[in-house]
Image (cartoon, rainbow, N blue to C red; front, side):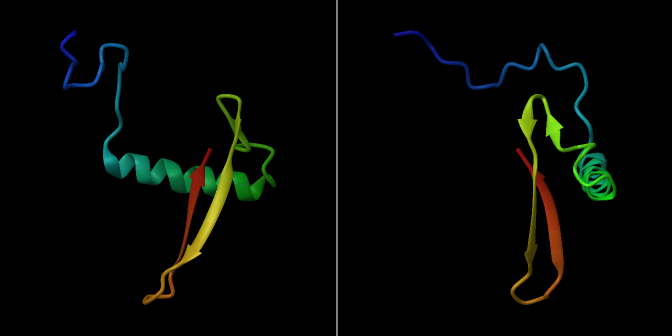
Length: 68
């Protein structure tokens, strides 16, 4: 049996954005997708993107996320 690594391979990752920047990038992607009707931001890395909007059960606040 070979010993498995406990840490992920990150040697190929040159830059990882901070969590706050990731949130802003997600919001920007949703706006771009909506403004262009899915022409821009509709596909990423060859995968179709999905905008999923949910409403909070208690707060009633709508939240939209991008998924592939």
